[in-house]
Amino acid sequence: MPIAASIAAIKEQVSHAARAHGHAAPEIIAVSKGQPLDKIVEALAAGQRVFGENRVQEASSRWPDLKPVYPGIELHLIGPLQTNKVKDAVKLFDVIQTVDREKLARALGDEMRKQGRFLPCLVQVNTGEEPQKSGIPPGGLAALLSFCVRECGLNIKGLMCIPPAGEAPAPHFALLKRLAALHNLSHTSMGMSGDYEKAAALGASYLRIGSAIFGQR
Ligand SMILES: *Cc1c(COP(=O)(O)O)cnc(C)c1O
Image (cartoon, rainbow, N blue to C red):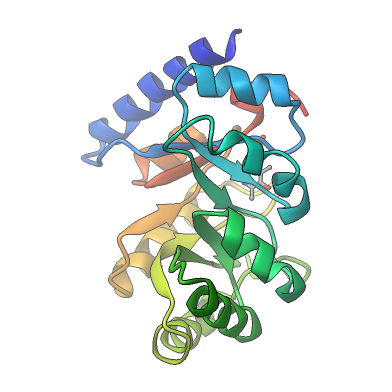
């Protein structure tokens, strides 16, 4: 399917799912990691402006050239961030979705002040409490949020999660929504190609969709 048609179909589907459950239509983040440039340009030509990338290095290889050509691009970092990449990340991205530890929060706060770029951030929550996965376990969230805001001056808009592979995602989406509400955060980033309709029905504000828009990587 052409990319414009995929995006239109997904938009229609998720607005419907969200409204049927009393939620506003979510924003679709087109996840362009691992996709060739011509497909990204096709999405841009179709009017898509919100994109997600996993790695600072890959994003740095193409978005600095695309941003001036297509005004209004909003680039989200959705992959793990090492502190030695914070400078490049703050320069290039518009939203950081993967704040998950104090050291990273501190580095982001310092770098944002240095660059005068105060980006909205999300805290990644490891809702499945998987040992090898990024994200703060739910039990550590309150302390990390308070550290981000009070000690680092970060603008935390919401929470992000990636449910464990092979588990039903809905309980994880519901948990993320509850945690966001508990901490008065307006945004949740949840739902990928395999489960975006469920995430929309559960009130996601951002869906991160790659292969369903662009095809397999
Ligand atoms: C790759 C990726 C996505 C998109 O995955 P698809 O299954 O292709 O939609 C979403 N979120 C994160 C964090 C990713 O790394």
